[in-house]
Length: 74
Image 1 (spheres, rainbow, N blue to C red):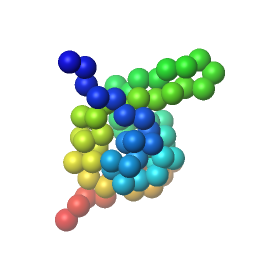
Image 2: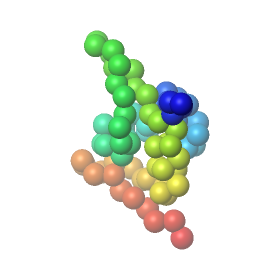
Image 3: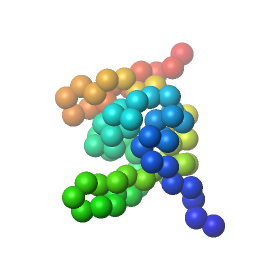
Image 4: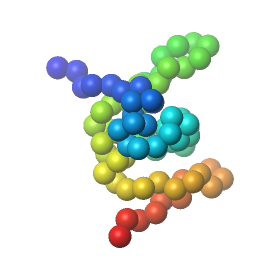
């Protein structure tokens, strides 16, 4: 059975962030194994387990330069 794949909009809803944040995280390499489809405009798909991993690891802050500021949860 294949793993469920989510669109950036679905991933954003699952994590509780904006769609744009998901696109920023894709560009920054936060998500592993993202599938991009489409030649002119890529359509991204993210595995449900990868969305859960990012959600579980904690809160990601604003992008600073080429890095993502990660805030530890207390």
